[in-house]
Length: 426
Image 1 (cartoon, helix red, strand yellow):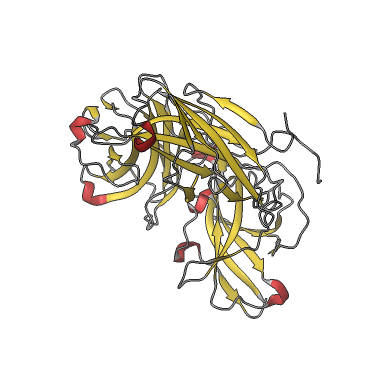
Image 2 (cartoon, one colour):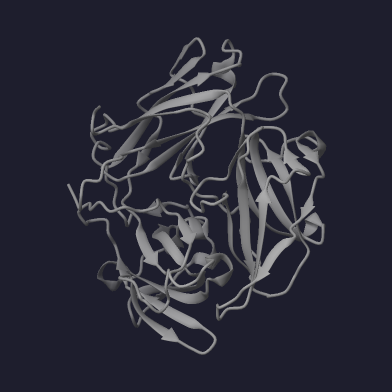
């Protein structure tokens, strides 16, 4: 097998996809912190439910009001573009159309007081029965007009398998900086005669919906097998291994924490200053591809015993000069990669760097910085792009026949750009 491209055959039975569950709501209420939607028992696993299986998904979040509220949830079936499908909820939900979240626990040990809510999905009396894209909507008092936040989850049917490979692009300008994904899809129980026109494919790099590639047509069709290997599709910038913030202990400061300030009822942590990495040589180290997970060194259960701290991040632009007509944002799964005021950093002319502070729970976080033109949305590369970078690509295969009223999700596959551990660098 070519060491520059790693082949991984995945069937629809695969449930060990690592990924990120991305927040949809832009304006999250200030009292809601650390919402997560992932496979039960694995905070880094993508929220996927296979129809008819025993798969479980955990929804977790904290309410800093430290009281008990009547939170409800429901599912909203969406089409391929994440717009609500033109179907009644009774057509895709078996049982009740909403349920109250009744499992909660007050925080203990932590200085910060909060109520931790949890629900294990799907519950038997609220069960999705169609495959596709779903929004999990959380709201107050059984009133959907009081929606607090929404998160994406996937419900899949077992009708496809995927064979994929990551290779270097042939284009000279992209050969050293980008990665190309080529793959094939084998359909089962689907009319292959019209599959080429009715199959839709989405590719996610590190499960980021904001940089997904969509509407990818097959290059060839052979019976029930579709080949996707055109030179101009599936090409992504390689990026660089993610920066990290190890906040598993507030007292035992990790290598990326410069100092801490400890008060009777609160904690502040000050991260080591970051800089532009675009010109740096590529160095391999293991990361979690932009994700994060809640954990601690000291407590028994970090979900309701983990503490919160105000964490200060610093980014120094080249020569200490602010970017002209550019905004700087903290980026990662924790921020849902949103370029909003909530995650915007401020340039301090005295220190000649961008600064920002956020209230974060104990855990381990991958992060980066996004530099963006507020008018055009164009982004400036400050991390660097390297073919050698370890990335994960997720392939989602959708199908909609002439009689279907929603896009079926037939299969999910994963391909890693590398699986070796080369040491520090090439």
